[in-house]
Image (cartoon, rainbow, N blue to C red; front, top):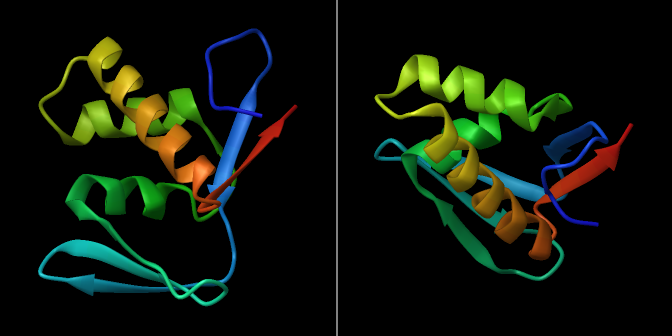
Length: 97
């Protein structure tokens, strides 16, 4: 399953099993299962916060567009790419509804 643009609504949410800290305005995570560290950066960290509860990609994009100086279509492409990378590492869960 991947985060893509189709007729099915996809909800994304944080996976469990990670210790998360703020370091100088960036989110840093440690996987309890495999011991790997992840630096999500500032905006990646914001996306992580928005996924505390299951949320749609368009809702994430809408929120980021309202908070940052970015065009909606560019934001959506970057969010989908970022979430795809996170999904491949097991950091997020994608649910089709």
